[in-house]
Image (cartoon, rainbow, N blue to C red; front, side, top):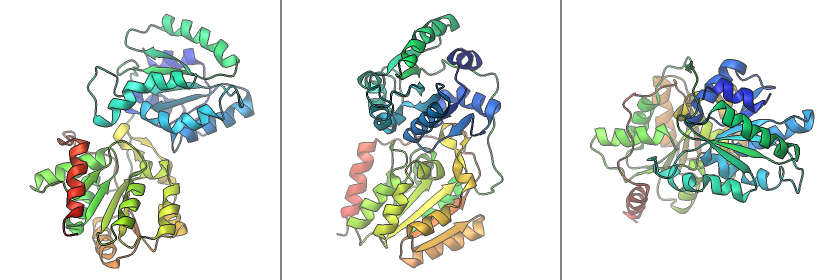
Length: 374
């Protein structure tokens, strides 16, 4: 179904969400139609943030908003769905559009398997009436469902459309980019060289994939790398737990700007704990690149200023390879809690692969390497 027909049938005038590759046609249409004009379309930090923004829109206008997300974000939206929006509390209606990764019977990455199996069940459990949209869903089918859903929405309840792969189409594909010169894979290569035998915790998405391939290409093993599969926004908290409880080891957390924004409160917790053996690198390309490239708010804020205010002892920023080399050496030598923002271009290799080891194998190897030498 063409996304223009899909959105016309939904009838929403305000959208907020977290981008998803499965919903790329919707995301591209939103950017082409509204851009990021905040009264019509907001790309939020996380899915709970979306639901709250949408609730404010409904309170202000009395209209029904649309919230879009990948099904992995259902966990972030459980709290507002079970409290703020629920018919027994404020009874705030909204339409959810959920990209279905990990659908049973369809091959997908490990982080999507369990979430995919419970996607519709979780919506059912939270009292959200849902309908699966696939390639065979016709506009007439959708209009009939939406006619029923309008009665549900009028009663102050939420509804959801769960979108299968390829169900939505859009004739145009929006290209995303920025003016930065460094590419993430080369930045990672330099981090690996400087880190040596230190441990690296990589955020979900292309960062972990590129780190894995860099190790493969150089004939190194992966035992010193923890590849955060799923759990977007939590790699810095994993790194904090590691750094506090293995103070004799050194840790590099390689974060992304979208992931950092998703649970940015972690920076305050890290800054308060002040582990001297943690270097937090935020690779900022101002984009949700792993799911298509839609912009994040990080392109418009001062991440180093946030880190400094949160209590990081050393705060650095690199916009060129010369600056990056100097910052990495300084971070390595400082032996104090350090935050380094690295401005990067949008883009990755077309032939970028995926880890060939399982998350469980990664965990076992990582923990064994941590135990080595005490």
